[in-house]
Image (cartoon, rainbow, N blue to C red; front, side, top):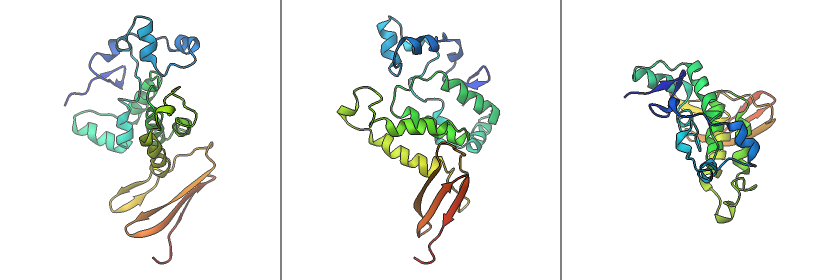
Length: 213
């Protein structure tokens, strides 16, 4: 399988790096919100497809589906060396070129940044929590809430922010340091044990296991 690259990052498709660059600062200054960048550009007689612009996370979905270690292994099997630095550049590149036109965009990016161990993860996680409450899309809440995004925020706290994985017949946790989130916790069931308690507070990870079932 061939994977294209440009400017040292993973490409959305071959030739993506040849598309025009959008003046993001100018559009953000001109409009209150550019979440629906496609409609803005269509009203101006353009199309989003001519620019290096994404409505939502696409290439970065790789970081939602796989951890950095898993990505390295997958790309190595395809004959590519995608180390942590290449992935960090890829994340930064597409973050600057995403308009977040989907209610799932912030959720996915929170996961990606959490796995990249960046504190900005909570900024996007908080946005995902507020999507329906604050009607960030401007009129979509009245049509119905996004249950997928709501469930995803719970998954983000339980697995994304804690780095929780089940590998080699064991639970593994690698929490993301988030100064903006002082404390959180939850219970889970593992290998028949109910009520396993996980709590993070002041940079400390606590795990409690019931004495008996």
